[in-house]
Image (cartoon, rainbow, N blue to C red; front, side):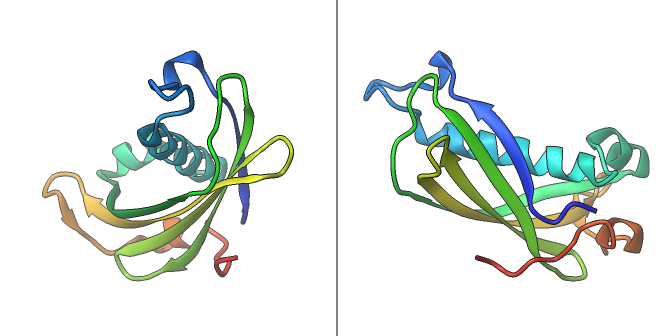
Length: 137
């Protein structure tokens, strides 16, 4: 069980906007990639969720941008789960560059849903117990 997961990412040219830094919406994509990789590393890949007929959907995001990311920057997106309730979880992120500078801090509130109904459902114990809960930094 991995508590704090580190997801490496190198900023691509396609991530750059007209201001010559990574566009804000790419941070959300990187966060999603980190969350999926963390879940997969803990034994719950997207395919496993689909086979169970369930999965996670985002209810809300909060991102605080501190410094820009540029093409070629090597990033580390740290992510962890800070709370798990009956049908929701809270996930945090820190996006840092290779020098250890914080570029953004974020959190997402996720809801666990039954795919056939698209409605929240109780998080199965086997899913909940594979995530080590860590308080927000």
